Amino acid sequence: MAKNVSDLTLADVHENDVGFGIDIGGSGIKAAPVHLRTGELLGKRFRLDTPEESSPEAVGEVLGKVVAHFGDLPDSTPVGLTFPGVILNDVTITSANMDKRWIGTDVGEVARRFTGHDAHVVNDADAAGYAEARYGAGLGQDGTVLVMTLGTGIGSALIHDGVLVPNLELGHLELDGHDAETRAASSVKDKEGLSYAKWAERLQRYFAHVEFLFSPDLFIVGGGVSKDHEKFLPLLELRAPIVPAKLRNTAGIVGAAALAARDR
Ligand code: BGC
Image (tube, rainbow, N blue to C red; front, side, top):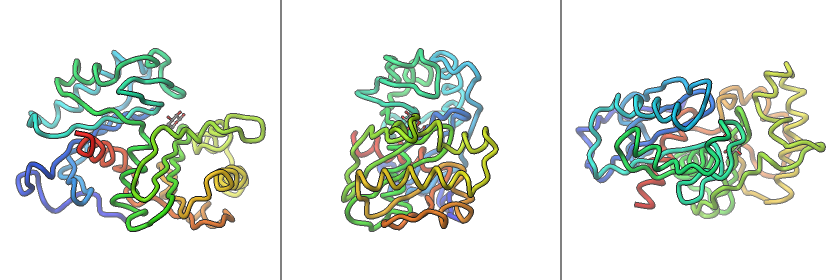
């Protein structure tokens, strides 16, 4: 099991090495301080449910509570925030699995209004992927790493020699005439009651297509279901190695903080 929380505390770490990450997901809003050198959390993650009606206002209020849990953050701390959609200059361009009122919303402005902090906004899979490539299962891997997150939707991140190409959106490739994530996300496995073997047949067609398009050197699979990776990853036949994510449920938080520090 990956070690998620550092033995060090906030007080032990130089302020330049501390970031703060917030991860907005379909089911929860989570945050924690992050050790930027190691990618470990510098304290326990705090999580509140994403409100059923996931409008910017409703999510903003929960965001405010999650950040307030950590008390005052120094102004010097880079704060990163993820959103499950295409993000350009802090603005949401798509919102496949959240309220459509997010489209066109300046997420940075929502964060400022409800938390009192400036935040650097990135796509959720980009954050998770960057964290895996830099601190997790992709550490030391040259060439092209594709990180795919299987959850409510399918997220994707492309990292080439450590450089992230943002907003890839491979979850919306066509698979058997459908938007791929509506056939192969882990939420669909649950909804349709598919066995791992049946679901893996869909994953096989999907990953084979992605591999044909990008020829990655390594696939990393994240999302909650990756904890059960022995049940489906060995069933996939691909040229590239395919391995489970290491950071698991902290990847979004860690990547958000690391990207905020990188782009400061
Ligand atoms: C969204 C992506 C997101 C992924 C995982 C997709 O539906 O379009 O932006 O990364 O879900 O949350």
